[in-house]
Amino acid sequence: MASLKRRSQFYGNLATLEDAGLPRIRALKQGHPEPFGQIAAELAETIAVEGLPMSEAMRGQPRLFSTMECSLVEVGERTGNAELVFRSLADWFELLRTLRGQMITGLIYPFLQYHVAAILLPLISYFAGSITGEPITIFQAVCRCALLLGVPYAILFLLFVVRPRLFPTGLPLPPWVSACVLEIPLIGGLSKKLDNTRFFRALALSWRSGLGTVEAVALAADSCGNSWTRGRFHRVSEQIAEEGCTFVEAYRSQFTPREQNAMVVSMLETGEMSGASDEMAERVARVCGEEAEQTLKRVSTIVPLIFYFLMAGYIAYQIIMFYKRIVFDAINSYL
Image (cartoon, rainbow, N blue to C red):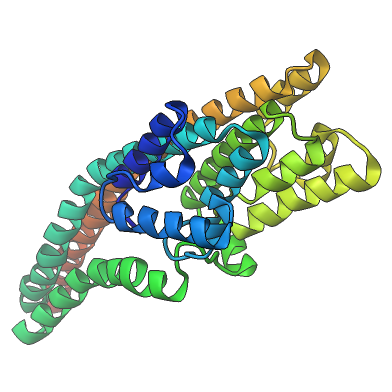
């Protein structure tokens, strides 16, 4: 996937050109940051030749554009608010870039800690073993060190090389995998908050554009990155269509109390009673975005502590085993 900065710039440029009244095809042919310059030109050609809307042309390139992007652009096309949607997408990817930067900054220290531990722990085992009478060879120590150092790079390889080939940007993970992701501590909560930010922002745009609740919820559901969460919101839309209930009633029915945020539900109820559901949905999106930032800050604080206590615990274990060996040798010598 192209960098978040360039993706944000691409949508920001489209929003500016749309606001200036430039036709969509001409706007796409303007100078955009690569690789979007060539991509935008291909989109313009597809739109001109096949007569497709931009959202459909984007869906023809699933490795480049996510379901969320295509769905939001479709909302803009169907409601005549393309400029607002492009601006919202630019802001969204800028937010993701900020969150990613915070995550990387927060993980630099624990990453360095891990490398120190990966070298230090096998050395401690080597020297402590030679003292306690349970030695390991230098070759074994080096192998342990190499194995520990290779683990994070193997994970990064799977995440950024293997996973994109198996599950491209526009192709979601299977629902059962997505459901498992949501149960991972911290990561699952962060995924929920990011999807709620996407959903409620898209819902606010759809409502503001005059779409009915059923259609607005269905379109907004497609903006969720997690396929399990997306399916739950689609069931909310289906329940509203079948039973004629309000969004909050369907939301409470489809999501368990543990999954619901009491403050979010209260805000949405207030919006329904006051007739300002779109404004409340936008506020909910902002709240969820702020919660996602706070979650990332907690992750960047907790992870270094976990590494520190694990390393300290291992060193303490080696010290205890060292003195245990000395004490038992002394006792045996007197017996």
